[in-house]
Length: 201
Image (cartoon, rainbow, N blue to C red; front, side):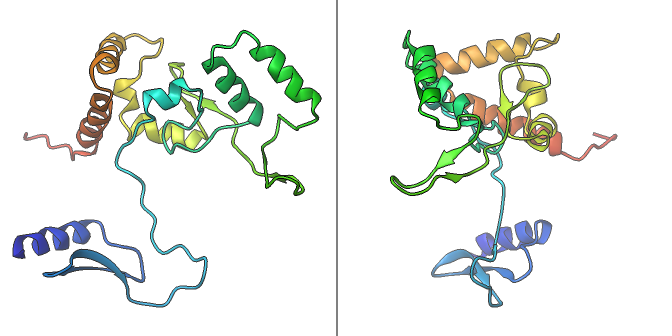
């Protein structure tokens, strides 16, 4: 519709696409981003961070350790092993980790590769804890800062400092009812943080 075209044009006027990409609206196909130049193989065409996201509770309870801002896996490999074993509730988790260490696998590094092939080491970043020590982990200082300043964590954090009681109660309520409330809260807080200050309002 004509209104959709106006909305799309206004959005990309405020948030212009990167060079080589053009925003269009077609009455038959709808909204689209198209390339208006050739790109080399492997070249990044378009990159955009999500507005907000959460790691599902079940995934977290299963022991998957990821950055709470970009959701990248956090290392070293031993951290993932220990978290997965502890999540299973096994009493032998420490013994199993020791057994893995005896195999010679470099658990202080990151190991990935097809069976039988030489090992390929991929770097998983060391965890960076939340500044309030709420338990959230990040892959780098940038992600911790981004989650705190722009992602709403400064408001929703359940850390040890004063003023987090409301956040704790909200989180408990969300976990008992619907964890998507946390996602909604992140979006609301982010919108409030991003809102231009207006002394007259």
